[in-house]
Amino acid sequence: MATLIGENINLRALEPEDLDFLFSTENNQDFWKVSGTQLPYSKYILKKYIKNSHQDIYEAKQYRFVICTKIDTPIGIIDLFDFNPQHKRVGVGILLLPKYQRKGLGSEALKAIIDYAFTYLDVHQIFANVTTNNLNSISLFEKFKFQKSGIRKDWVYSDNTFKDEILYQLIKNTNEP
Image 1 (cartoon, one colour):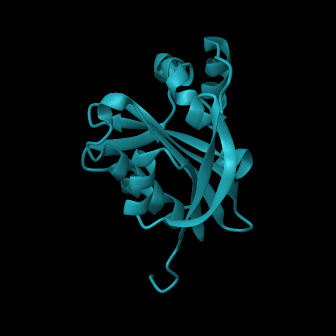
Image 2 (tube, rainbow, N blue to C red):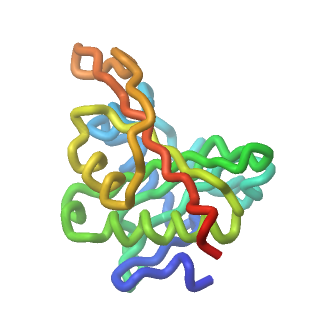
C-alpha cells in the first residue's frame, strides 16, 4: 500500500517485536501529558494490546501505526481514533521520539495518514486535539491546512496547571476527485 510509504519513513502495523518500543513509549512520563495516560502499562498488557491490534478499524474504531525509518527502526506512533464511518470522520494523534522531531519525518507520517484516511477510509474530515503550548504539533497541523475550529478552555491539566486545547479539522475538498 504505497499510501503508507514516505520518502524517509513507513507506517506499518504493530508487530510483536515492537513490545520494548511500545513499553518505553507508553511508560515515558514526558509523553503522558499529551496522551492522557496517568499510569504505567505492564509488558503483559502491551503484549495483549499488540495481539489484538489486528482488529479492523471499523470494529475497534481506532488503529495504531508505527512510524519507522526505511530500515524499520521505530521512531514514533501515529494513531487514528474515534473513527466514525457514519459521520465520515476520524481523529489523528502523532508522537515522534524527540531525537526524530523537527526533521520532516512527522510531516511525512501525517501526509501518509491523511492520504490513507481520505482515500481508504473515505472520511470527510480528520480532526486533532492539540494543547495551545504544543508549538511543534500546532506547526505540523497548520502546515497541512488543518483549521482551528475551537478552543476548549482549561481542558488539559498537566504540570500543575490547566491548558487550553485547540480543536483542528481538515475537511476534504469535495471539488477534488
